[in-house]
Length: 137
Image (cartoon, rainbow, N blue to C red; front, side):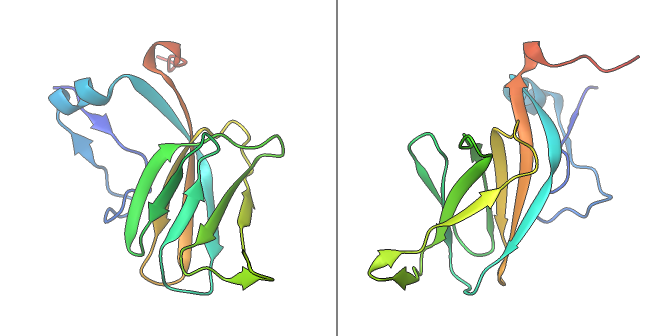
């Protein structure tokens, strides 16, 4: 029986645990092959939600204590932009933060906003499953 194992980080699952998905769910989500690139972290000054600009025209709200995953397009410098919903203001304008990632091929993010002041940015390269590089035998 085939199954899909999600890479860490998955909210509520320890780093050494494996999260196995039944074959029927694998078939539903098998259209993409995600390559885990790495994790970046940020610490913010408040405990509220954040809003991430995906670079494609949308903003994704990530409430404290929750996780969201979505496609992202980095700018030419390898950055994306985000802000706190409890907006700090500078001369009347909202403060927009930027995050420069180590992996320019990142096109999919899993953002975890813990209940404290930390944000985890899990970076992936998402490709169609038929474009994935086969693994060695």
